[in-house]
Length: 371
Picture 1 (cartoon, rainbow, N blue to C red):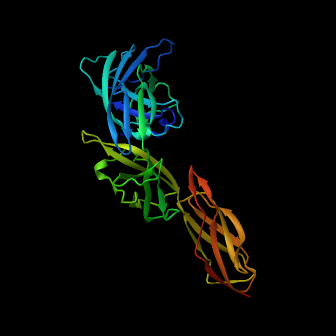
Picture 2: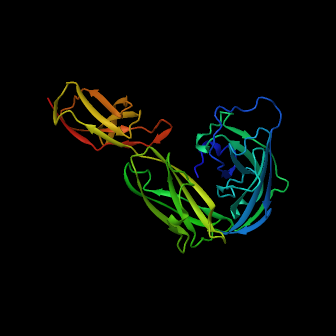
Picture 3: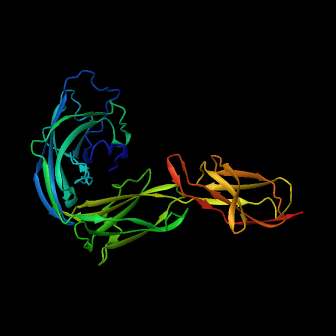
């Protein structure tokens, strides 16, 4: 199930989305009056969970909804878990479809969902319920007509007592990322309290793109298990030159029903290293004459590029320019030192379209300057 990432700060965790009959309400606007029209009640079974290490406990949530605007059956229903403790950053839920119970109608209905609770959900959780008009991918947080939050009550919160909490680390090698080609995502799974390695943990790594989120895969395709020291290593390839890429690593536990649920999630944002070129005007140029150097940075970005010359054992900047949107850049300079000169292009760290590029340099180019 796809989850639009803009919703993550708004609610701690998306628990479930119920795909109701596909009929859409066209042009339906949120009610202008302040009258409460949407209420919900959420009950957990069991409401108290004790779980340790990499295990998970199957839990059921029952959601009862009353809608005075009779939209049940037209909109989608979602239930989220949240905690008042800001340190609880690992949601205890795997997103699954809610199952509507018999007897539902346009104004009242009850749905159930099953999910797995891991040790890192240690704490107290309450629920929030909302109706969505359309799919979560299409929801705009600033558009009040696309969702309607219910006044939700959770008579008995979900209380999780977790022990031997697992921890996951993740890194990239080589770093920074190459422009193209293979690289490794690797890390270790250990216990938080004593650092003891977690052996045989099922780890899945996802490279998140516009069309792929952390939830968009089958755990049967898991990349592998941690070894006797808790280490894992996954080799992947970049589909194209990237400025920036986000990775998600998860450890999964298996419920008695055979379902796999995430018990540890780790995100890693990685900046990429651009490729940089420089074309010299000719093998030989005349001293005192204006010459042009051209080059290209990929992926295309507007960055500060330096033309540098090797002088007395170090690179000295001759000129600075800003690359065009296409990634192309041009230097104009007048060589005055006869003999063989070494030039290179050098990109400063820059930010473009919300992405990050690290510094890089082109290979040195020889230019013979004649009197």
